[in-house]
Length: 72
Image (cartoon, rainbow, N blue to C red; front, top):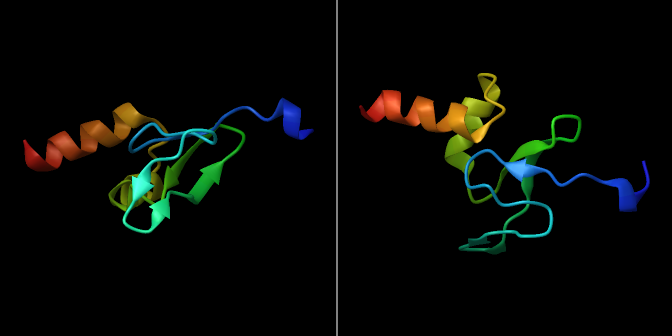
């Protein structure tokens, strides 16, 4: 796949993407993990979403549902 054909991946935690990174205590975020087939991942600013990712969450709504369940 050529770079010009790359579809943006979005973070399941905050929604940032390949071109719009979020700010962290250490500068701009980077991908902790990214699935280029599904175009989603977890950025370094959203480490709390990594557990949901490891349990199969691949959308922001899935992560939000897990957080609401734990805190609700």
